[in-house]
Image 1: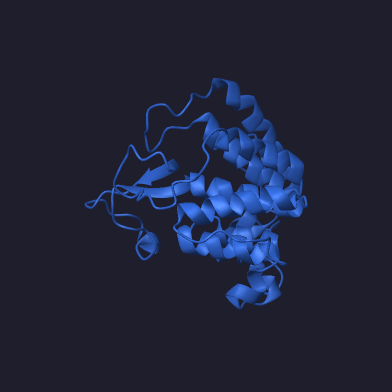
Image 2: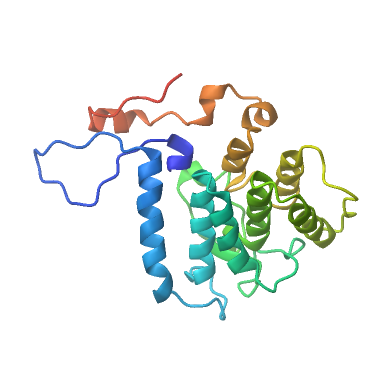
Length: 241
């Protein structure tokens, strides 16, 4: 939500009737609080030994912490979390279908969406029919890792990881690192994952969202729903809307 809307209402207590609702909390502060919660939860999470669409594993927590650190521009720390997931897995499962096989090891976390399920109408045009709808997957972890390496100027490591992704997707390896690796990272995400969860935020962090999506700068944040503005007078619409 903070990736899409920026500063938001964030609180950790129950409000009583008549009590004033708070104003927005800065995105940076919310992410820091979530990072603390995730770090505290990791010791209680299991390994992903048995595949389950809704199984919350250490890998998933590490992926989320890595993404938060990318948002905070803490690239060295972010790469360390992605390395925990990649470990001895030398290549992502780029070519694997993850929409029907609950045992597919590509998926870190998925939503169950069966053929006879009826999602909220707003999601009908986006959800893919099948058993699973991926939210986080290991190919994404590899590309997030590449993102952190690019930002930290670790060129040789970056070239290696990009080529592992390319080879897994039956593409020729790059002989050398592109002058602007951000475009390569974005293109690989679009080709192997699609404009799915994480793509918009990836483009924003890479500084490519305005150019590749042909949007205006202020549209990198979504407009706040009008009903939220009516419910809380301390909320203001995002600039430009």
